[in-house]
Amino acid sequence: MALHLDLTGLFGDGSDGRLTRDEFDAALPRAIAAREAHLAAKPEWRGLGGRSDFLDECQARAKEVLEEQAPEALVVLGIGGSALGAQALLSALAPLYQESQPAAGRPRVFVPDSVDPDWLGALLEHLPLERTHVNVISKSGGTIETSAEFLVFYDAIRQAVGSDEEARKRFTITTDPASGHFRKIADELGFTTLTVPPGVGGRFSVLTSVGLFPAELAGMDTQSLLEGAARVDQKLDAAEPTADAALAYALAHVLYMERGKPIHVHFPYSQRARLLADWYAQLWAESLGKRVDLSGAEVHVGPTPVRAVGPTDQHSQCQLYVEGPDDKVYTLLKLGKFGRELTVPEPFVESPAFSHLAGRRLDELMEAERQGTEVALLEAGRPVCTIELCKLDAFHVGQYFLFLEAATAYAGGLLGIDPFDQPGVEAGKVAALALMGAPGYEERAQQIRANQAARTLFTLTC
Ligand code: PA5
Image (cartoon, rainbow, N blue to C red; front, side, top):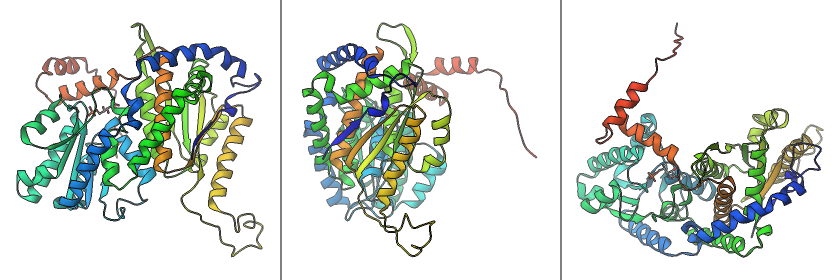
C-alpha cells in the first residue's frame, strides 16, 4: 500500500547528459532551504488529507441529492483546476465506461470543460435533463466559460422541469465562501453551495469539495482518497530533508531545466491513469511557468509538461524521445497491480509468432513494455524516473496528488517564483471578458482591438 519513487535512472556517471549523484548532492542545500521556507509557510492544501470538514459537507449534500433527486446524470461545469481533478478521479477510480454504465445507484458523470457548442449542444441533447444534477465549480466565481455553461444548463434544465424553484434544486454551486459572482447569485437566489477555501488555489483544490463532491456522487471511496494524501503529507513532513521524496523529485527536475532539459514527459502505463497526467500537466505548467521571480525580476522560467500514455505513445512519441533532442526528463508511471487479470489464450501455441505470448498475462506485457521504454531511454542516455502506485485505488491516487503538489511547491521555491499564482491565466480571462463586452472592461477591449495586427492569412480552397 505505497507509492514508490525510483530516481535511479535520473543519474549517470557523467558520460552522458544525465546528472551525477555528486551534482545532485551538491545542490541539496539549496533544496533544503526551499523546503524549509515551504514548511514554514505551510499552505492550507498540505493539510487537506487530514481534514473532514469538506468531506462532511460533500457527503451530506451528495446524500440529499441522491435521496431526493436520484439523478441519472451529474454534469460538472468548471475549467482548469475546477475540472481536471474531477476528470482525473473519474478516469482513475470510476467504473470504466461510467458515462454509460455508472456504479450501481450512482449518476453517470460528465465534465465538459469547454464552451465548444458542438460538445455542449450534443450533451444537452443526450442528457435526461429533468434527471440531471449540475455541479458548477468556480473558485473566483468570474470565469467566463463556467458562467456561460451555467447559463446554458440552467436555462435548459428550467425548461425541462418547468420552474425556477425545481431547476435550482438541481444545482450545487462550489465557490468561494464570501466573494465572486457565483457566491452572490447563490446567496440571492438560494442555490445550495459548497466551499472552495480561499487559501487553496484551483490546481491544488482536488481534495476539497471541488474534487470530493463529484467523487462522492460517483460513488468513490473519498475517505481513502484523503487518507492517502494525509499519509504522504505526514511522511514528507517527518522525513529528513534528504529523504523527502517530493523534494528529490523537484530538485532533479529543476537541475535538469537548468541544464537544457525543460520538457517533462509524464508517461503512465495505465489507460485509467491517463488523465492523472492531464491533472499533473496543469499543476506543473501553471504553477511553474512564470514571467517574474519573487524579487520582481523578469525570468520567463518554467518547464513544459508533456502527457503521454503507454504503450500507445511508444508507437507515436518514443522515436522522438529516444533519438530526438536530448531536452526531456521522463516520469514513467507504473501500476504494481492492475484491477483485472487477463491471460492471452493459446489457440496458435505452436506458432513461433505467438508462442511467447500464449498463457501470459496482459499486465506482464504492460510491464515489459514499460521496462522496454525505460531501457531504450536509458541506453540513449535520457533521464528517466518511475513513480509506482501499488494499485490504482483511491488511497494511492490521494498519495499521488499530494506527492506531486508538494513537488510542485518545492520546485517553485527552487526556481524562486510563486507557484500559487497564475497571472498569465488571469490575463487571458480578462481579455476574453473584454472581447465579449463585459461591463468594466471597455478600455481593455479598445486596447486589444487597437493592437490587433494586420493578419497574415492564407486561404486554401478549391
Ligand atoms: O488552477 C487555477 O487556479 C486555474 O486553473 C483555475 O482553476 C481556472 O482558471 C478556473 O478558475 P475558477 O475556479 O476561478 O473558475
